[in-house]
Length: 331
Ligand code: ADP
Ligand code: MG
Image 1 (cartoon, protein in one colour):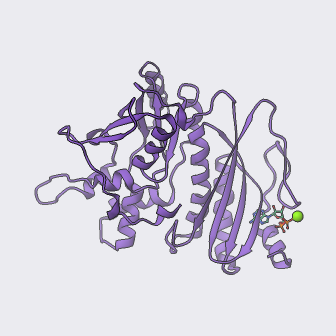
Image 2 (cartoon, rainbow, N blue to C red; image 1 turned 90 degrees about the horizontal axis):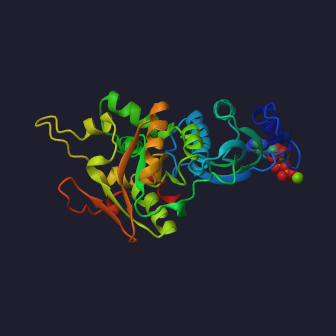
Image 3 (tube, rainbow, N blue to C red; image 1 turned 30 degrees about the vertical axis):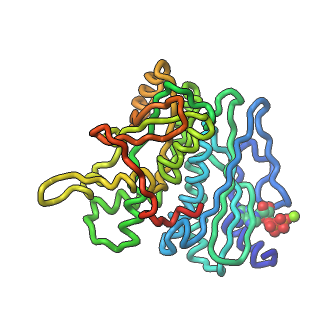
């Protein structure tokens, strides 16, 4: 689309006031012009959310807009970068002003909340898909890279795991469940909070992080591949929410039987998994405490090349991913 309708649409919905000083020229010309500060590196990432694959088609436009930004900011956080700019490539089946109104309002609010400015994009016609490129700034010495884990490091994760996957499972299966369980899980699915400010501060102590988008097992696996290390993690140390625990509690006998496959491989958590030497770990823990963010020690890095998941009885837990067919497995 490059006709009048497209230009009108861009003008009406996607031409924010320029409030970042480093944006010399924003939406409207052939390119945006940016003035990044000298001495900083650029961190760039891009993600596409396709309707029906990366989010259920009934997701509200406000949630889709929020999430399309949050997933990019989560990648920036995983490097320790400060979010700065966004581009938005929007593929729309048709022009629906109600949809565009709520989408663009939420997009503008979310980007302002996180200090990122929309600087350009593309608009095309086709099945609904949203591509957001997120760009950030980072001190050259402070990036947290996947290849920096060392044997002896402790492994930490922020927040809790599995809530978004449980939310998606409940949504897709139409299971009737108490609102007090469903609402927080859906909020985690639709409105994940990228750990941006914690990550920026953590990058002063920690050199290795990844954000958990495909599930802890797969994403920790990327750290192990890149760092040529092994890891041992402990099921009884994995942080799960009260809601998830409640969902997996038998109402009759009170036994808790958590679906660890969902917690480890469900995905869409957008929490951080970090590794840090024992010596420096206390500073990371107190940083998280000072920011009121839960940070849990879940295991340790070793010198082999495998991920071992150990149950409370010390027995190895074998992850069977085949039972999990999630929306977000194609991304
Ligand atoms: P060109 O054909 O020169 O690439 P376009 O016609 O695609 O330009 O877009 C015109 C201007 O509008 C450009 O500045 C582009 O970055 C911006 N733009 C297009 N679509 C969007 C969008 N969905 N969100 C933000 N900016 C957009
Ligand atoms: Mg052009």
